[in-house]
Image (cartoon, rainbow, N blue to C red; front, side, top):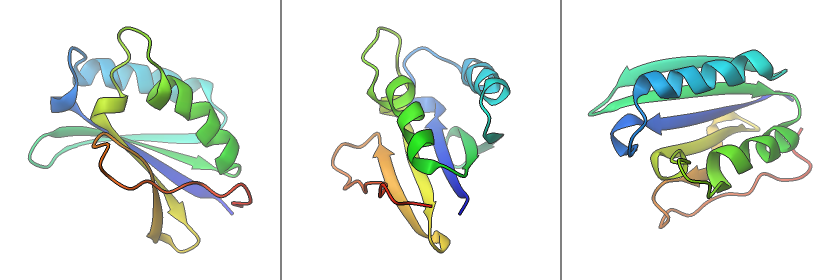
Length: 116
């Protein structure tokens, strides 16, 4: 089953990157990954960029995403404190999983290894 990840980057939470920087980085990801990647922008009490990634192998996709976008401690890595990552569940967005949230007090879900 195809799953869709949504990485929402809240621009106001970034330290030094701009919306243009975020769009450039994710545009390069979209051009280099096998998965279908769609980039949306909007403003809901603050600018955001949504990166939607469709995957037939969500566990592999999540593992590939985690280090550079969520877990990296390299200087200049600022997506983690500005990003929320969700993925569709068995019933689409009705039972989505919360995989990462910039607010460390949020309870996170784990992507089951058998997710199809």
